[in-house]
Length: 592
Image (cartoon, rainbow, N blue to C red; front, side):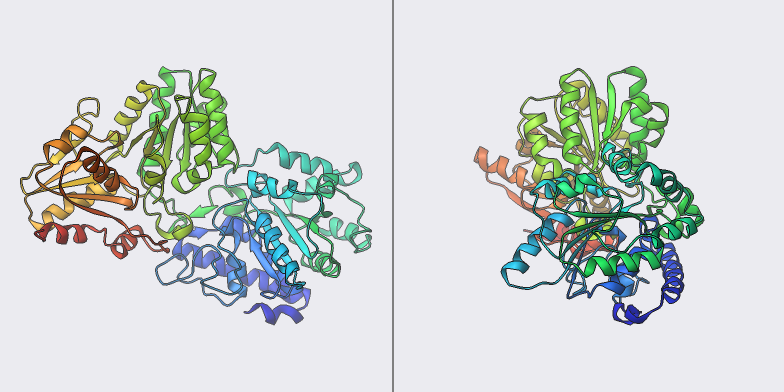
């Protein structure tokens, strides 16, 4: 079903199509994994937008692009290989379709992109509509708010659709959204709005109310002066699952050239009972709707629970990812010691700096790809003052099916050049706990990076307090300097595959380097091996050390190429980058 085909659909036909789309999404996400609850809640809104607007001539810009599956189906894309190698991405991507103006992997970006696009459009004398689809609480992101606050004058022919489902990834506790709800619900509407937003079981009363209201922006009775002071005509709140009302309202919005914010209240997970009951659990799911294995994330929860009993200063900070980073049990036992910053990573880090200065011991738990958004705060607020903040950098390395918007390949290059910050990469979960204790005892800024997925125990008993690096397997010819859990695992496999006389080293401290060991092996053939970008990464740090010391070496750096890596499994991505165990085995067999 293509978008242009639904222009002449009746409301009844659209409602039938909505049911078919939900079945399609459930079936394909069950088969491939992906983002379920957010897409089920966006079905009617997306259908109404495609019926009323003229995409791709008009532009539809997504925030948190994981809510774009309906849009993909309506624009002729098959979800049967969703997020698989050779299939469609889980996020909008202009390389995939002309219906996608921008890549949209992270939150908070759509309004700024839309304002910028409108400036270029107006300069060229065009008049296409620009629609920003904002959801999963990303309006509370700092970038989104900066865009809203930028000026009291917003572009013409500019529409922001707020998909308000009361959630981010986990429960949304934002005071901003509570303020919006209060401001938009006058006393005579509040009871009805609460009823609709909580149950969605019966919409007839709401529909009757709306039919009494003249469908025009100027005639809309329920105003929100916050958005109006920021340059928008506010419309809503409307029921985001009533196609009749949505289409009528959007037709009137499209007929004017003023900037409009449409506030639609939706239910995350709508149409699939399990997702309705537990939208956080079904936000992102693995194949078969099972939970994905993330050994390090699970280990973090146990580490935090054990250490919290010993030190009441220990607190956790996350950004709408309590469950994803493994803090659910910790939050259940110590709810007052978990601080959820919402989808606001910069604020999370700055808040942690304030905590540390005041005497607490914060542990900031973020995915590698989202840590990038707080780089300045890590430098300015934490490291300049050398505050005791530990960054647990989850999903470091290749991200797998989330693809190029979520790769954790940048963190080593970003972090290792910051003064006062130590950077660690444990080989397994046992070593993760040891390194956490080591960093905690030091009381200075530290980052501990680790991947998703399984994490086999690799043996070894040498704690980092005794030797920065650990020789896991001795050899004479070649030294493999492996950095990170997957790299160490593949290095051990590669030695067996190649039958090589290689020494495998667990380089678990990226900063500081084990300079004594590097001097010791400088006469031997060296291969650095990491799951991160080669440029500016761990291997570069080794090369810089030897260059700085004036020590000539034979060093080969194996890391990710200078490319954005598309969605596939992590192992398929490693193969595409020549970072598999087989690739390393071939390198070991080559005499240089």
